[in-house]
Image 1 (tube, rainbow, N blue to C red):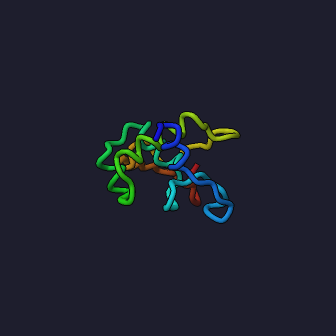
Image 2 (cartoon, rainbow, N blue to C red; image 1 turned 135 degrees about the vertical axis):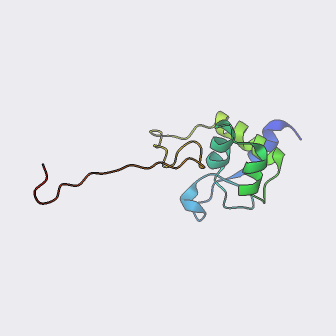
Length: 100
């Protein structure tokens, strides 16, 4: 089986699954999420911990598939920091009676 066949067999687009978002066959795991984690430099062990149904080969193929098939439309803004262990704190000073 060629790499192209492996890539095309890995990904499924079904309107009934996550509104047609490309997912890894047999799962509801979005391919672009796995690929983004790998491209962001997350350790493979951590990715596999987050997605225990995947193998190292699945992660590599997801990364390759996403690179060959970029999502259409504008890029989405990241909703979390690149390092999920980072905690961001912000103080908001509120004006109360008698404060300027």
